[in-house]
View 1 (cartoon, one colour):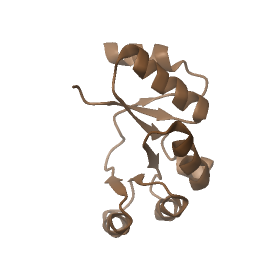
View 2 (cartoon, helix red, strand yellow):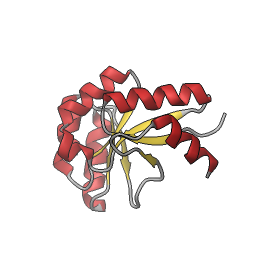
View 3 (cartoon, helix red, strand yellow):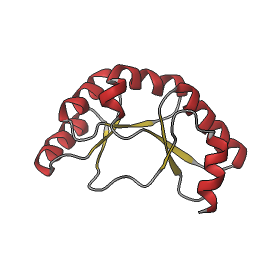
View 4 (cartoon, one colour):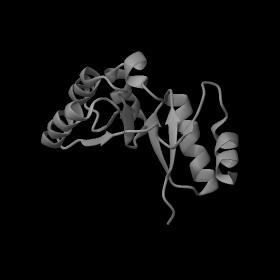
Length: 130
């Protein structure tokens, strides 16, 4: 089985469409939020989005440690952070205590970033051809 294609989404409609496109193409996917989404969508919304999708969602908190902690409190258990190394070490410890997966991203993630209004099926097909 091939590695999942990471797809960055903005909302429930886009997440469902991305999952449907992946099923139609028989391609494994891993959903994550758009870059820095925790800052403008909010930790509570993203935890509810993951629940509504019924699949794990990697929450991109950018370089804001407070957003990582807010996402943990809201119930998210897969978190990405791109801030300072010393802060990442502390956040990783906190996440470990809460059985959460923590990813310290030292460079932009390699993923298909859907823009609002994109057709996930079309974009996924194009992405797979690259």
